[in-house]
Length: 92
Image (cartoon, rainbow, N blue to C red; front, side, top):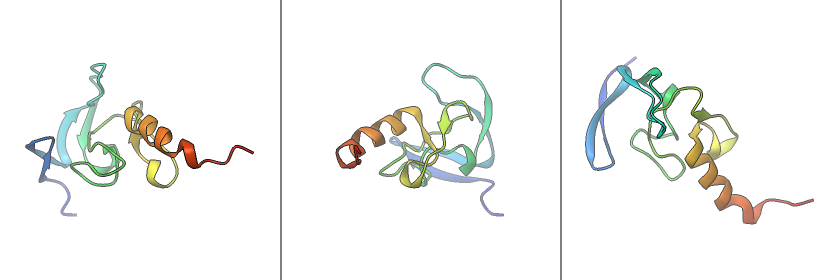
């Protein structure tokens, strides 16, 4: 239960994260839905970002489910992931 509050380094700055940290959705179009900076709202698997996700925090309307590495990504990272994988997908 130690993930209620911690700090991460993201995009050149240190921010507070965890399920106890209230914020709003970080979608570019200015969504003002209230969320928390817990893993349920995280784009990617690693706070701060990883090779698949940007590390942003989004509401359910802007964070999409998927399979494997594409699970729990914002729309921009989902699009990027699919563009990178398009050369290896079967076309049968």
